[in-house]
Structure formats: C-alpha cells, structure tokens
Image (cartoon, rainbow, N blue to C red; front, side, top):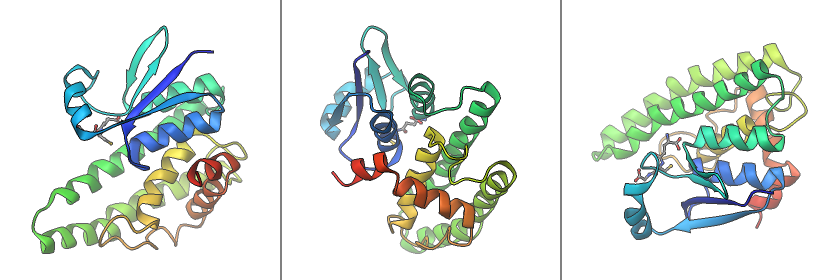
Amino acid sequence: MAKYTLTYFDFAGSRGEECRLALHCSGVPFEDERLTREAWAARKPSAPWGGLPILTIEGKGELAQSNAILSFVGRAHGLLPADPFEAAQHEAVMCAVEDFRAELNPTGRIADPEQKRAAREAFAVGYLKTWSASIERLLAARTEGPFFGGAALSVADLKLFIIMRSIVGGGIDHVPTTAFAEFGRLTRLYEAVRTHAGVAAWTSR
Ligand SMILES: N[C@@H](CCC(=O)N[C@@H](CS)C(=O)NCC(=O)O)C(=O)O
C-alpha cells in the first residue's frame, strides 16, 4: 500500500483536520506531519499551491488543495460512492464548504472589534442560513440519512462536520453555537459524524 504523509499545522481543525479524519476513517496508515509556522515559511515557496494541507504519496508525489485530497482519498479508500454522478454530488458539497469559508474567513481579519461583530452577526443570520437551507433541501430530496449519501459516511460528511464544529464548538466569536439548530437533517448529519466510531476514535485521542 502507498505510504501517505499528510502535512498541516498542529491544529485540530479546518482543511488539514478534515483530511486527517478522512485518512483515519479509511483505515489507511499515514504520517501526521505537523509544521511550525517557521517550518511552513521555509516550505511555502515550494508548496504546489502555496498552502496546506499537502498529501504526499510515496511513488507519486505531492497533492495539494483540500478537496482534491479528500476526493482522492474518498475514491481510493471507499469514502465516495462509485457512481460518478453521485460522487460529484458529494464533491459539490465540499465545494460549498469552501464557499462558506470564503465568506466567513475574511471576517476574521477585520481589525475593528465592532465592525467584526457586525460582519459576523450578519453572516450568522444571512449567508449561514441560506447555505444551510440549501444543504437541508438537498438532504431532504436525496436520502434518509443520516449521512449525505445515506447510511455510508463520505468525505463530504467529514468536511461538513469540521466546518460546523468550528461554530457549534464556539470557535467563531459572534456566530451563535446554535446557528445550525433549526436545520434538523444537517444537525442529525453532524451528530452522526461526531459519534461515528472512526471519528470518535480520532477526536478522543
Ligand atoms: N484552497 C486551498 C486553501 C489552502 C489554505 O489556504 N490553507 C491555509 C490553512 S487552512 C494555509 O495554508 N494558510 C497558510 C498560508 O497560506 O501560508 C485548500 O482547499 O487546500
């Protein structure tokens, strides 16, 4: 079996953690390489897209971009459906999580506390609700759940879990931890991922 190294920061969240979770839940051994900020500064110029995570596959090379890594792991190790159209639906969800980050992350760089509060509060009642309603509609139309593809966990579920956990866990000031509570299917999916044996084993280490 190929030897994998997943390189990210020493931080249990965001794009690196969703890739670690995918590798762990697939049951494939991998080296969990965690860079200091200094080590990253030295490596960044030669990184494929100038960002982390990077998955290094022995005999093949480096793969960057979190969604490409998740798709690769999902296809190679059973965390994406075999049907191409169905797999693409899961990949669309992963793209939607990146859209969510593209809206939320700039609010973290607002220096003025009141402006930051206003931007985060607007995000919580605006973009977050519209985004969640879109996924809720997809879930209602597609599956009995609890996961996006039904009974089987996928990399899309893991990516949804990580972005939702950053809010449910209180990590984003001014965005309520209950922001997703009105979305029953999404909340059920979150709980199903949180209590999945592989996920629970990883997060309780
Ligand atoms: N589109 C890329 C974004 C990568 C990205 O921005 N990663 C952040 C961490 S989540 C990073 O490397 N930040 C440090 C830097 O850009 O130097 C992906 O999905 O992997």
